Image: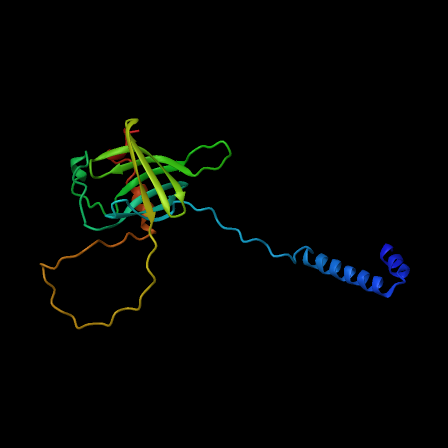
Length: 214
């Protein structure tokens, strides 16, 4: 072997010592790069819109879930409970807005490289009773851009912020039960369970406010 020939040919002690140090260093480098021994880089999953988002005015949160390959969103929390009073269908104007679908059938937009950071579908706005062609896109992992256009024009949009639930706090000390009062005021509304997003979204597909407005 060439290493043995070089080892035998070294006649100056200092040169041999340097040669042995070089061999040891090379062996150490090889051992660090041996298959399976090198540390693998941490792979971070690409962010997506699935999760809960606070709307721009902070009056509601929307929970987005993947339902049969498309993204749907329902109202999961409200600062003030309301009803869908401007729905074009009179029969739906008394339904609660909590749990109501508002992001409808969002599918990945086509892109030249097979990857997309945009989803296209429809959005229902209970403030005016209209359904808009819409798209959502991630500006960053915690900011979702929501844009909609009515009949191809009158476009607008806003940014939603990803909602991170606070750390679980210890349960408060129990107090003796008190007599309830009919005048007691409540703030906010109960969050929508994650498992209920798709059942509410897909169960409502085809309602009058969701068809015929592309």
